[in-house]
Structure formats: C-alpha cells, structure tokens
Image (cartoon, rainbow, N blue to C red; front, side):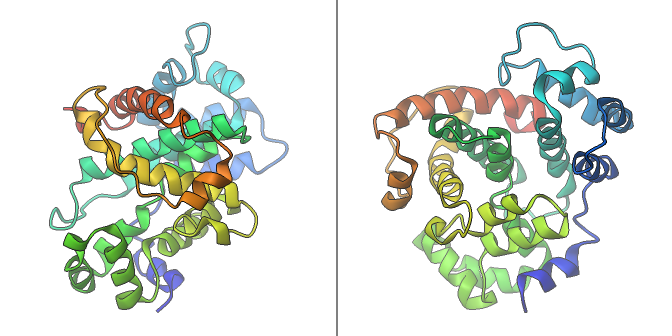
Amino acid sequence: MTPQQLVQDVEHLFSLPDVAIRINELIDQPDTSIKDLVEVVQLDAGISTTVLRLANSAWYGLPSKVDSISRAITLIGMKALRDLVLSTSVITTFKGISAEFVDMMDFWDNSVTCGVVSRNLALKCGVRESERMFLAGLLHKVGRLVFYASRPVQYRQVLQEKDYGEAAVIEAERAVFGFTYAELGAALMRAWRLPESLDELIAHQLRPGEAPHYPREAAIVHVAADIAFHMSPDIKARFELGEYNLTFDEAAWQGLGLERSMLTEIMQTSLIQSFELLEIVNPRACV
C-alpha cells in the first residue's frame, strides 16, 4: 500500500468544497480577475463571512474597515485569498472522525497554532508568501485524520506506542503502514491539486533537510509543529505562556538563521494571534 492508494480510498470522504476547488483553479489562470473570484466566493455565505472577518482582524492589520470581498482581495491579494478560503474550508471537510482517536477541537487548536507559528517564523526569516506557510502549518497533520478514518483497526496498533511519545508513534506508523502521516498528508495535497510547494513542505516536515526545493520552509513547519505541540494547551489559558522543553531538531532551527532569543517573542505573538484566529475559523474550539 502507498500513501496515494490510501488517499484514493477516502477521496469521496475528504473532498474540498466546490468553492475552494474553483478558487484554486481560478488563481492558476493568468486571466482571472477580482470580479471572477468575488462571484465564486459569494456562492458560499459562510466562507464569505469568514474571509471578511479575517480581513478585518489584527492578523492583517489593514488600516481601514474591509466591507466587501472585492476590497478584501484587492488589499490582501489573490494568493492570500486562496489560502484563506482553503484554510476555512478544510476545517469543515473532516467530519465524523471517531473521538476514540482524536478530539477534533484540540486537533484544530494545534493545527491553527502551528499555522500561526509557521507564518511568524516565515516573516522573521524573510520568506515570501508567508500566508502559504500558515496553510502548510494548518494542514501539517491532516494525514493523521486520513489514517483515523480509513484504517482504524491498524491505527489502534500504532496508538499502543502513544505513551512513549510522538517519535514512537511516528515509528509505529512506519512499521504498520510503511509511511507516516506526513507522507500521507502530502498525498492528499496532491489529490486536492494544491500547489506543489505545499505537498513538499508537508511531506518533509519530519526530515526537513531532505526537502529537494524548500528545505528552509520545511524546517519552519518542523519547528512550528513542535512549538505548537507544546503551546496548544496554553491557548485555553488565554495568553499565558508556560515553560517548554522544546524537542525540534536543532539542525532545522539552525537552518532558519534566527537567534534563539527570538523564540519567546514569536511564541507570545503566536499565542495571542492563535486565539483570535480560532475564534474566527473554528469558534467552538474557544468555548
């Protein structure tokens, strides 16, 4: 079995909304206009509302109120719109996952936090298109959801290693399936026809040095995932950072070229932004 074969088995369960698919297609066409995008976004009232709330949030820090989808696209750009639509759509895509495997509110709590940290690390590193880094962080563990939904019996074997830590779970995935959630998530990105850079970042998040084209960006997701894993419970505590024993690969951190002293600032900023974004894209997670 390959990651691609497993994704094919569940494609009917995990397909993006029509609006997200169409927006993704339009962005790749050179003659697409803002009017074209507005017409598609407005077909989904929920996505329209969320995009406007995000455009008016501190996340973008725009100087004046954004009162229309057209103005939102003009100010944040077409590619940023695609990433916003995909971000808000994907949370509604995964439904019916058994609570035996995961608390979905906690899952998206962690995922949004990883997206926020990824974006903030990217900004510090001077990476272009930092919104894409938010999306990569948000989607970094969707492969786990595919495992839970498609192979629950086998995944129970994997979870027998849970008490030994995340590294043990990852090795158990390799032993049971022959691949990890990272490779499976990348296969889902390809099935959804998302930009190739995105599936590379997700595929190589565990070993960023092996990424063929974007090793620094993969290192960002790697570091952000570890930070988010430790920070996520503090989102519920409302802006109080704890003491963390971060376990990311030191080589990945060195590849970012950042000072270690920047971590506290990045984490504090990310904590506040994560809480705001959770209230917008997944309100139930902040109850």
